Image 1: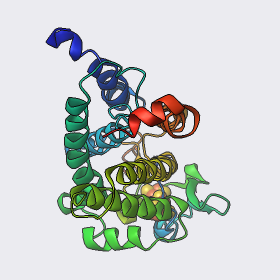
Image 2: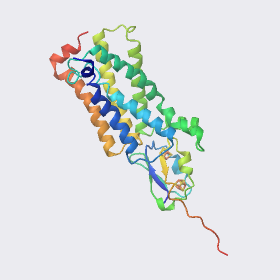
Image 3: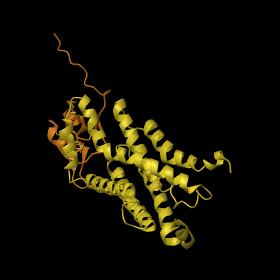
Image 4: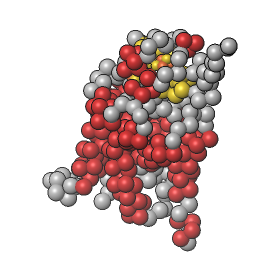
Length: 71
Length: 215
Ligand code: SF4
Ligand code: SF4
């Protein structure tokens, strides 16, 4: 998991559109984004970059380990 | 009364309306961001809490300001008002300003998106609060040019401020990135103190009502 928090969301839905792996959903009752499938996050930062109010935090410490091909 | 003791009333104001919120923002468990973003957030929250403190620093506070020189208190009230209004007015720009220095959405597009997200209760409340704040500012600056008795103007100012604080507090609790349970409750509590002062003056205390309405 890498996307960690959404705070101060205005519910514009930009991050939902931007996420390639459908991690974020919009809660219909309070019209705010929430992290629905954190394990699917690819840390592409597209959601963070598209958020107008900078509401999304992506944990820097949870980075994908570097994968080196063997042989 | 010496000068030192005259300033005692400022101590609780400084602690509860400035130090506590700012310290909580600094030491609380919030995602860390760039220095610029943190400074802009501190300025916004500081200005907002000073607005809440305006009820404390006004003639309706006949509890802790008893025996104080009201003209000095009112002077401070005006200075805080005129400093905080521009900060709060600019805070939507503060949100998008750091976007000029990072790879992300264009700041102008971000700003437009914020202003046009009418599905958000927080945005609607913010726009109403902004309109009320501008109205308060304009009627305060042009007080002498408005053909209105001082007493009437002061009542209008008090109730416009009450409406502003109610809507702005709701907006802040709904959208504030630092609004966890403690901070939300603290903000609502500090706003309620102003409401209590106002209710007490205008609805429940005839003696104070007369005093407050004196020029
Ligand atoms: S970082 Fe990328 S994958 Fe992860 S939630 Fe954001 S857009 Fe989706
Ligand atoms: S882009 Fe930001 S403001 Fe818009 S829904 Fe996503 S988290 Fe909320």
